[in-house]
Image (cartoon, rainbow, N blue to C red):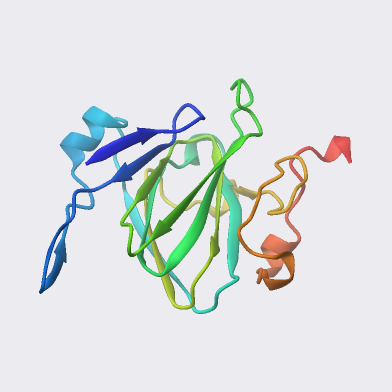
Length: 181
């Protein structure tokens, strides 16, 4: 696997070695010993999968607080997304900054997102299947979110605003720095 550091301390893009022939392909999507050595000493306890039937679905920006904060390893099985991680670690020199990575079933890339980041993704193809490992169990009482189009982040989404499809929860999420509104 190829491990690519990003402009923000913590997140890592992972490119697996893919072996393919006329039958299809094979790759190791996760190997704990190598992951601990190259990325982080994290134990993942929950795997999640979501299907987004329509291009334009945007999920996020989500996070969990306190002891329930989650590190994630995300990837796309089928389709394509723009994946975004926003640094919400208050003492970080990149507080409020984000990274954006295209993940797809074709490029097999994965993104490791440490605790202390808000996460979201925009679906770029119909019938996209997104999978992620989490280091903590889902805890509804600890969940939080920020508005996907908050000007404090200035995220350059790869979809026109008019094509964005949101849940009610994501459409009404609070702004990151409400005192500056």
